[in-house]
Length: 236
Image (cartoon, rainbow, N blue to C red; front, side, top):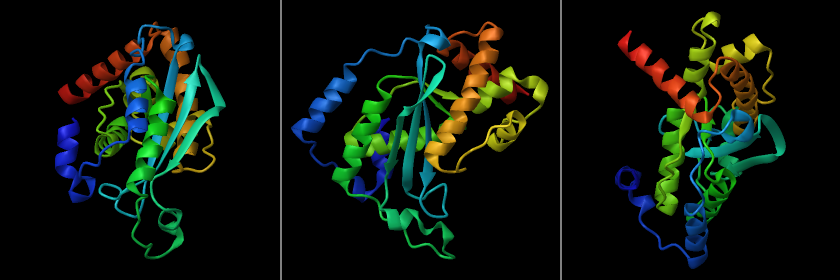
């Protein structure tokens, strides 16, 4: 919820009036039709999302960058990708230092522009991430703070869906690396958001093929698999 995100955002996220151009772009995005979750996987557009956290505090550190990649009609389009830096490069590049300097977020105006680009890229497509709740919280909080936007799009957690569809492989859902190794998928640069979104897109392709073979042919059916798997885990 937008009001809840603002409550915990702190003083730096105080309301800043949005320009007329920003308001027009937000209005256009809001008017886009809701995703049709009943279409076939192979007639749908999924958006894979991943993020990096700047600094060593992965729970509370600032959002470092966002990576997004689209899977359209079952195919990955390398031209349909997005990378957004949310901190200044020097701060995000301190991983090789023993004590990296504190991350410095980009300015409020730059942040709004970046997140508008994200909305424009996503449109109203269903979103897919591995361990989606963590990614969703950070993305939705950033949108609420910067643009006063509630995303209200379906998130599909590939960790739960794959555990439900590939049960014969055992409990590999905790770590994405286990799935990548099992299927022989290489990540170009592990923990880089765009590279990880690409690796996740390849896992999604395998998942869609298995899902369709088992009669789960739509985005809505993946959501149902996730719900069933969560229920099984919570009641076990």
